[in-house]
Image (cartoon, rainbow over the protein chains, first blue to last red):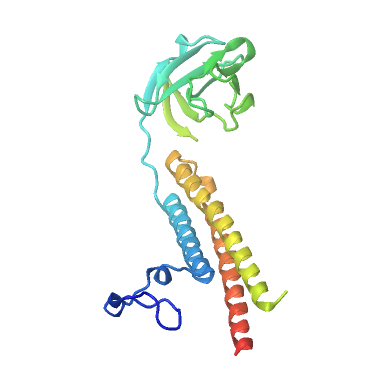
Length: 169
Length: 77
């Protein structure tokens, strides 16, 4: 049998009567449908962002523990000491500035997470990996690739003991 | 340019614009999630507002395109 009828047009195969679905047409998506689908995705993303904002607003972080860092006399002017806060996986550094005040920061560089070191002569915290410089007074970036400040560890002093009591991101 | 061609161009432009805004929204969600997990909560509300504005723009564009489409169909009839 020929696939063409008498007028030359392609003839439907016999199974077409039992399976009339045309995949090409069935899978065809118009731009209108695509735009509707994309706008639905946009709505879902906006809702997701709203949920994240709501979670951030209503969920309170658990209070951080109080951890004794060192004796105050153990850190001289221009000196520094390392400790871990709030967990053993969070390295931090406490420095005593030229004004005698103790200030503590996360030791993790906000650029690519290398450990910063204290440079007393320049009163700064320095990241040797990519030469990032942070102020030892408030932890803000002053030179190099980092653009976010180092998280600040809140300190208090009881007697001779220096105690970490919180963290400000 | 014929109205039908105008409609095709309009729909393509609107789809492209919606895709661009959608990509920015995806980035906003990932940035907001990262900020939430790192405790930096100050950016969450602005991110949600920006995302809502982008959704409103997308919705407006879609509404405009569908309205244009309906008008074209009515004219063709």
